[in-house]
Image 1: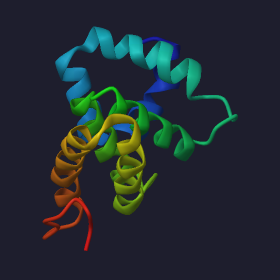
Image 2: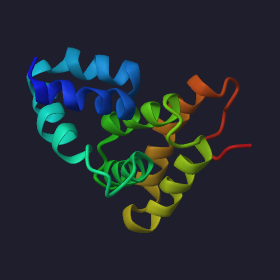
Image 3: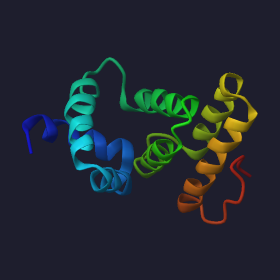
Length: 129
């Protein structure tokens, strides 16, 4: 791999988590290489925003564009790497409801619920306890 890939790869792992990074590479190694070299290496390496702020912006964008498979990967990465809590992710979805509508918010919550269950055994509600 290239130097740029090596520079961006830690951010892929941080934001997608181990499983998400593996799935991205498995699904399309060529596209993932491009995303890592030109997305993560170019944009995620400056200090203007910290990685937590980048994660909030990313989740909000994925929610509003209904990119639910990628939202799932990024949600898992946020929890796995402790960038955000489940409560914070729920609140991002709720906040986006005014922009995307109730049906889309319920769809995002359903995806989040599946991921939350991996990290919070017994969690049966995307709205928390």
